[in-house]
Length: 296
Ligand code: GLU
Image (cartoon, rainbow, N blue to C red; front, side):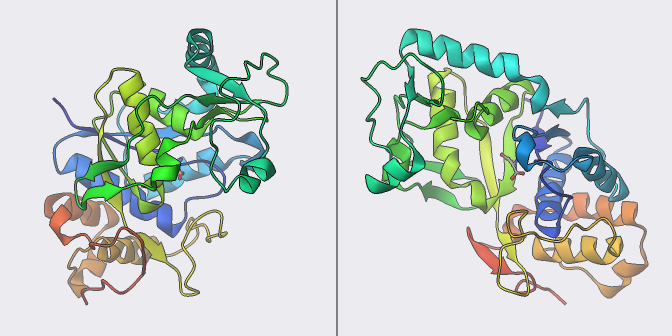
């Protein structure tokens, strides 16, 4: 089977250093196996999106010589597919409407305990749609880290596939789209370890073989904060690209000699593909300071 990997940014902000690490890790892992590397724009949440951001992310990927294969998939164009699946589960009783608010769930101990499962609510107004999780997944195998365990209370929850505000949930879209794009392996940040259990339970429900997973450690900025859009990590479109590229590659465990700074960006990327190895990745499944793994 041909390897197919992907990078799936949400256009809620420009590409930042943390997402450059995910882009590079997934690219090197795909290309070192002569596989394909696809890009999907996860534009599921318009209120959190920045106008023009998807274009900016794609332009930045091009500037880093990260060339994707095939067409880009936009989640905003797949609403009918998501809704069709939700309707079929509502009809079969696998999914149900839930009127619980976040506040109510917090008052019940922070985890949803299936309160609306038997209420047979029919009015979708102001309700979320939850999936009755048939086979909770409590652990999974990560290519780098081996068996990873998921908080059992979280794994057991009937999770949301459509939000109260009418937006489709990330876990549903990500699985349907990875299937649509024929992805064989997902390489992404360790912040997505917890939802992996839910995603694997969706594959089981759909009677499909789950992708394999590799989670990359997250970089902590100088202020000790995770580099993410939520923490307003700075966009990298205006920075010195070569320096950032080399910093990101060092974070991923590459040993890089000083003369690499004399190479062109495309040469550095090709060198990365040739020299990529999962064994050199930092062992952490959490966040580590940017330069703790520095080889120079
Ligand atoms: N869209 C998600 C993000 O930008 C990544 C989803 C994934 O890789 O599964 O954090």
